[in-house]
Length: 324
Ligand SMILES: Nc1ncnc2c1ncn2[C@@H]1O[C@H](COP(=O)(O)OP(=O)(O)O)[C@@H](O)[C@H]1O
Ligand SMILES: [Mg+2]
Image 1 (spheres, rainbow, N blue to C red):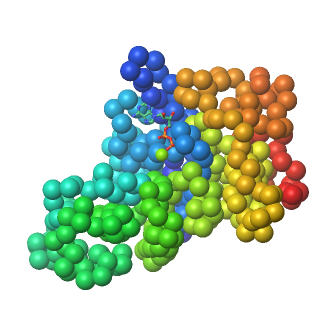
Image 2: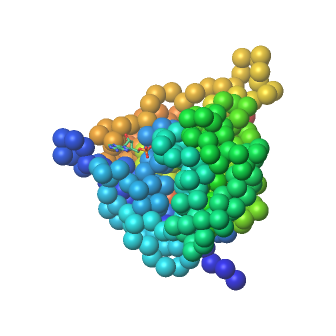
């Protein structure tokens, strides 16, 4: 019987602005990730997705600081801000994450040798194998390529190989396909899914695109203004959203049967609040919410359990099974 691989409870992160003010960027985020499971975190830009992953990985920007909560890996607390060797991360922009002055082979070999004791020759053989695993043709020859000599899709494959070089048990992926052409996006998502399943990794993928999350996640968490507003099994949350924000995100996805009808594809009106304009009372989504009432402006909205494992932080959840 194996417990959760990664557990985050009550994680909060503050950001200090250049004027010296402190704002909460992430508040009270809780999740439990099992081996072989993919959690998808979705929310508009600025909702705190990257800060959440960076806090888990221990690579927060200088302005950010973990202000509360606990992170456990295989039951043992890990120091927030320090990370864990078995947690690896793939970023949106592989060009900025790869070192431009070293060959990709060199970077993977160094990572392998940093992770486990082995000879250079063994590390090299393992690096070639990893490049093959992530779908690079002629991997032995590609070892001597520099990052700028590869296409965006190939660079993202190299980033995935570099993450796997650490023998991770948890893979964090921050918008891993957002910077890529649509045709390449699908290939990279499929590669991540296959990699995760074959190695029984726990994966947390964040994206602003609920379509991407729907493709990979078996558990969905919806984030708004630094908080998780809805979470649950992907099939339930995506087919029968409870939070009006989740429903809005889903309505903004163009659907095949709507093409040419003028229906569908309605972006949510308004903008999410900035760190400085987040309300400190009531629901953060309330100014944009079609269901908001006076109570939403004043009451704290604590998450409540709708069904086993399924939570929503809303005073007026959507009616069940009544979408459209
Ligand atoms: N280095 C930073 N300095 C100041 N503010 C930041 C920094 N990084 C992120 N933020 C702020 O923290 C909030 C959450 O950001 P982020 O986690 O990057 O959002 P997301 O990944 O969901 O788009 C945003 O309001 C963003 O402006
Ligand atoms: Mg981000």
